[in-house]
Amino acid sequence: MLKKVTLTNVNTGHKSLTIVDTDTHEKALIGCGVAPNETASIEDVTGADEKIQRFTSPKGGVEDCGAFFSGLGRCLERNISMAKSLKLQVNRVRSARYKGMIAEVIHSISMGEKFSDAMRKFPDLFSEDILSLIIAGEEAGQLAKVCRRIGFSKKKSSKTLKKLKGALIYPGVVIVLGVAVVIVMSFTLVPAMSKLFTSFGTELPTPTKVLIWLSNLFIHKPYMVGVPVLALYFFFANFGRLMAQRWTQDLSLRIPVVGPLIRKSAAAAGFRTMSMLTESNVRLTSALEITASATWHYHYKEFFLRLRDHIVVGRTLHEAFLMESHWLGSDGRNLCGLIELASETGSGTEMLAEIADDYEEELENMAASLDKLIEPLTMLILGVLVGFLIYAIYGPMFSLGDVILKKK
Image (cartoon, rainbow, N blue to C red; front, side, top):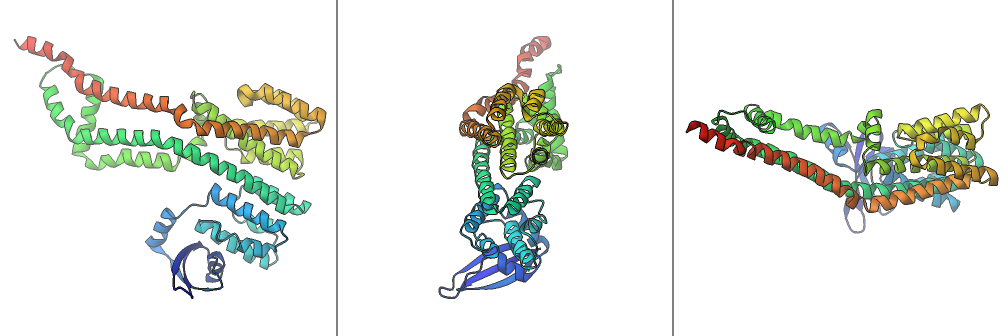
């Protein structure tokens, strides 16, 4: 349940509003980050107002995760108590979900629970790899170091994601405008055009038939205009679920510009997770299994699971890499050489971190220039749309001379 907390400064009278996702007023008071010179009034947010708030409020994503762990690790390194360290993170996060999570974790710790057990109650915020790192940090007495490492990794991911999203705005706008143009033409130009073309008494080109069919559909059933709008909304809203399907992941790897970007993104996330787990003294088979569960692309999920199976039967990591390198694409042989070097020098953790660094650097460079890389694809989409409209409108004009000569 959402709680709306109004904070009032007793010195200036200035009011500020904070939303906390929690179940009690006591936890909302913790999650709002009230200062000593402020008073707080709490209201329950229910019904339609709650749905609107959840839809419009910031979502708890990678940015909040990075800020939370980075600040928490910094506080723990200075020997600040866990409860106080958590309270100091309330004003660092933006989403109501994270504010409520902090309040709940503080409450759980005050009841005697471990930090990792309290975090386990929020599987939507903390994946299995993060929980495993936290558990390993608690057992090794290096929780502060682990939190700083998680925060650093999430901040880098957030920075890259912002660049990717910024580069995808242009093609998204082109697609939306193209759909809007087709809808507007269906109500204005196409009805008049269809009367003229049907009077010719000749066979119309297929694009013209499609355009006339869409126009008739929208005119006689105006509510159908909402279908493409809803389709675009559900496409962008469920993009993550769509990309989780095997056929879409296979298809995306074959796209010239997008394929290498997706492969490097999945590889960077996978090797960074494995590097952090092995550095935190997590057993290799467990680290590979956790990495597989945390990897979003099924190629790399299958790769890490097969590595685990080879390690279980007694093979070395280098042998396992050689046998499964085909899952890594063109980088497979190169990575096998790096793992062989690591096995000879005893620097496996450092080499995994270096592989992750290389992938993240390449991914960041590609993301910085993605707008230039994706421009040809955008122009192709725009060209196909414009060509379809031009041919649909002017195609029948080419047969106008034949119609006139027949009448004569």
